[in-house]
Length: 189
Length: 126
Image 1 (cartoon, chains in turn brown, green):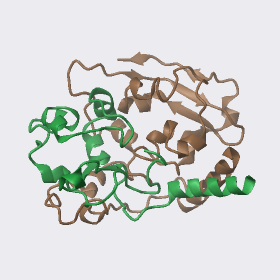
Image 2 (tube, chains in turn yellow, orange):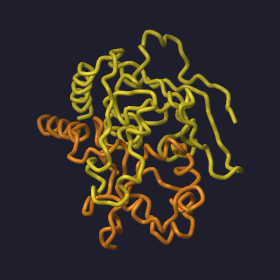
Image 3 (tube, one colour):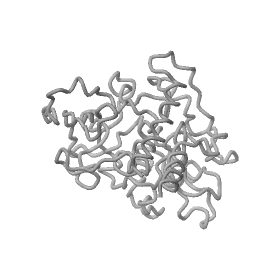
Image 4 (cartoon, chains in turn red, brown):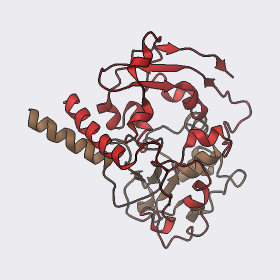
C-alpha cells in the first residue's frame, strides 16, 4: 500500500517537475482578487477594504507554488519582518541544527533544517506531540504526510505544498557518506 | 488487495493534488462552526496576510491556536474578552470585534476548513 502511494505520488511529482523545470524563469505571477476567490462573498462590505493578496505578495520573492512567495527568503532578505511575540517577556527560541532523514533508498535524503522552521515556529509546535525529539524515533512516511499528518500538517496547507518534492528531498545520498544523522548547531536565543 | 490498494492510493493522491472550485489564496481557512446558524457570513482567515506581520509561533504557541483547522473552538465571547483573535483584534493592534464584516466576509454555506489551492488544496485531514 505504502509503496503504491509513493509510486503514484512520484509520477505526479515528475509531471509537476516537467511542467515547471527548476531554474527556468518564473512565469508572471497573479493572484485572484478576493471578490473572485470562491471563499469571500463578493457582496461583503469587506471587499474593497481588505488588502488584496496581489498587492502584498507581488512585492515578495517569487515562487511557483503555494502563495507564490518564498517565505523563508522573504525573512532572509528583510522584505518582511513579522513579529516574533506579542508580549515582550515571551521566550523566542531559535535552533540551528539540520537533521538528515535517510529511511528509504530510492529518493534523495531529506535535510530538515531546524533554523528555517524555528524562524517561524516554536519548538513546542512540533515537539513532543508531532515529533519526538530523538533523531530517528519518528516513523515518518509520505503516506501520513499526504494525509495531513506529520510534516503534512503544514506542508500542503500553509507551507510549500507537497508537489515540491526536491525542496525536502534535497541531498543526494552520495554527498552524505559519513555525515552524522544530525549536525548540531548552537542554540541561538 | 493490490487493485483496491492501488485505486485507494491513486484516489488519495489525486484528492490531495486536485484543485477545488474555490481558488482561495493558499492557506486560507474558512471558519463556519457557528456563523451560518448565527445569521452572519462565515469567517475567512488568510494565513498570508497574518504571516507577513506575525510569525506562526505568535498565534500557534503564544495565543493557543491548535495547528489543526477545526480544533479551535473560538466564540465571539472569547474574542471580546481578549482570547484567540482578541489578543490583537482589540482596536489596539488590529481592528476590534465590532467590525464584524471585515472578518465575517465569507460566502454563506461554505464548510469550515483549509481552502486555497495553488497546486494542493490542503491536508487530507484537518
